[in-house]
Amino acid sequence: MPVYVDYDTPADLAERSLEALEVARDTGTVKKGTNETTKAVERGNADLVIVAEDVSPEEIVMHLPELAEEKGIPVVFVDTQDEVGHAAGLEVGSAAAAVVDAGDADDDVEDIGEKVAELR
Image (cartoon, rainbow, N blue to C red; front, side, top):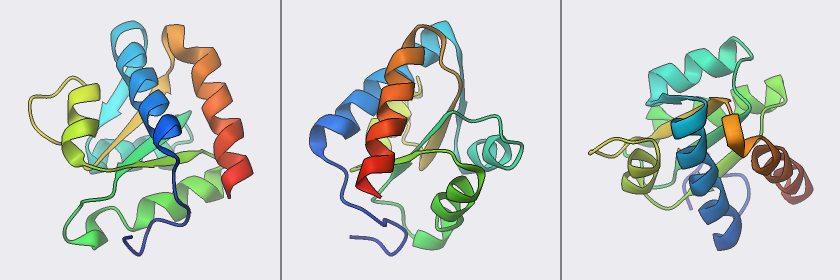
């Protein structure tokens, strides 16, 4: 487990988070990549942050979980960058993504946030 992962995400929660990211991509607004995700978190615009566990070097995303926690934004860790990229609508992997406007996934994002709070 990478240094920046501070809890073990259950597989069903990771899958649900990726599905919510896909719905938000189609009906709301998402930010893709570490830089856009970091900006959304710093501005307090993100409702949910998804970070891949296979990022190398780890320093690329190491700041995101702590920054999101300071802002009260839930973070979900998923296995690969390819999963994040695909769910965000990219043909390549992405180290991180943020849901800014959940669109039709609003209830799911809220529920995911509650489950993440229980895990921490």
